[in-house]
Length: 524
Image (cartoon, rainbow, N blue to C red; front, side):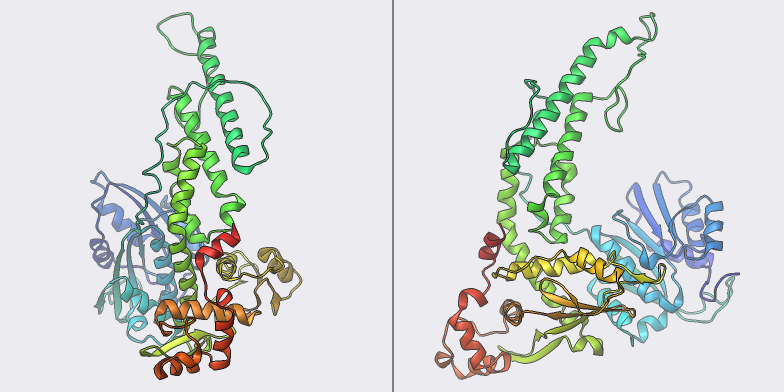
């Protein structure tokens, strides 16, 4: 009935898993991504049945028969295949006993989910996954477990007397990944909006063309209209009483704002909802989306709930702009360097991906590297479920690469809608040499993507930026002529690019030596 990789978790082992969890908070959002029959969750709920903790549990299970059992037990099943699962929901805890044959992929997926907001993971794996890391996924998993200070306990005979018996040694893994909290003065200098302002209401059409003045005027019009409507309702509400008995406060016509009750503070609730709507509109506008990569946008989106306490006006918008300008240079530099790492050493542990980089003798190190013209990335566009190539899981990463190259590029270049181009090619069965703005793409069903840079100068700028930030190029790089350099500096230049290429850089320093401030001004 059940597949060969299904090994229900014994009760005593589930108790060991649950004992790892720090349950000090009142509310927990929990995900069990290989829920099976719900054996782990049964023990979890039993352990907490007398506590006052609020547990919100989501389940994922790939086998239809097991999903039916979970639903009969009243567990909330939110998806079938964990490896293709996508959600922005925040989970505090992921507790899991994934299939032994690909547990590495499952735990990597769980880590990627928890990393967004911070949280805890308890996972059972076949011990061989940890002790014999011969695949790309196992090596990646070992690296991430080390980076996140995972606790690993090896256990023998835990399944010896289980529902499905096996003598395999297992690894009980616990991670507690802290929430990433960035220091920011973004909201400190904003003027706290008054709880209610007396607005002068006047019906008029919006006429300003300037984006900010236009959207602010829209906001004021909507707030003024709504507030005037609610005031008018309060004035005429006594005429709508559903009973002449003065003891009862019931009305035949009621007004509800948002999700709050009818007797909430309607005006202030309404203003908060409208503020939130317009802050969201501003952040999702082209002015923001074209400039920021997804990680920066995510941080802005996380502030939406805070921003609804602030009036949507020019002052507060400018305060946000000032804060962004203060932090943008650092954020952009980190984003470029992060991509440099992703396209180079982070994938170089596998033979195929090792071809992404070229090693050279760096300044005081022999482990410097630069990115080659062609790189291979673990980017899976193939959907086995729909039996076709799809952009859903890949487009975000590719857009981030394009945005980084936008920061580095000073040339006028034809703009290409990346998502539209790839979708159009996939619909025509084209998966090789897809022409994009800065690169060509080739996708393979095995889950890799070959990216080839079109502009050698742009790739050189990328490598110069990354190598300088890593401290692999001499301090005088781009400042001294080749003949003025000491012998040690010349050795590095010869290994990195050669004298001829370096002289080209010296002759056009403004183009090759990246000034992030200038790049941002070009984009604006």
